[in-house]
Length: 111
Image (tube, rainbow, N blue to C red; front, side):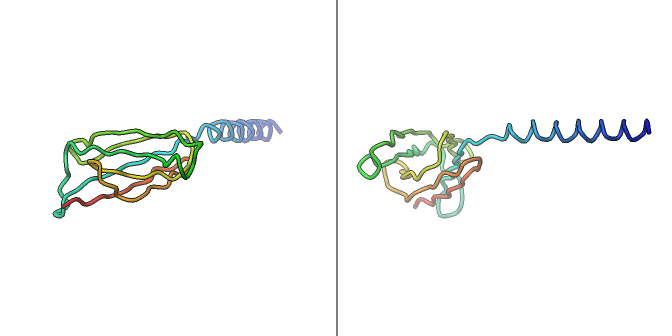
């Protein structure tokens, strides 16, 4: 009987612990933009801009920029999902869709 009580206590503690930690999962929307040349070498110092079109979506106020690091990456993090335009050194490079709790990767090849 004592064994059952201890086992039940361990099970209940495990379930509660799992429930508490599973609620802490980050819902941040992360974007990793990788800028490469045609030989897949990283381009360092490229200006990457993520922006939402306020004409298409007047409630969107995102306009942020980062410079690529030595590995050709630029990192961004947002609170809410959405669709953003991507520019590299002022040139449009398509769109990226933000997803809650996910990191989205976009590879851009420049000439």
